[in-house]
Image: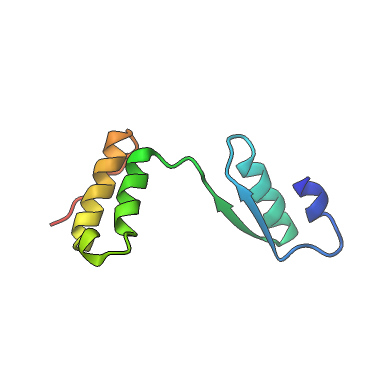
Length: 92
């Protein structure tokens, strides 16, 4: 479907799609060749990361992370918990 849309004479301003294995690279290539900007999103967010960001977005300031270092530590811990912290962050 993306190939059909991107081959039209009047191309869209943007192509929006969800990242999926074995599809994302091809979609990005097609959009790039057509000169169309891309917005992608990933719905595979681990529960540990969702909890971290939910707290960061809490409407009550007192219930949010109390600084960038706390948030960064929580993100790294969440990534460690799901085995995705390939590049550990060191803070001094």
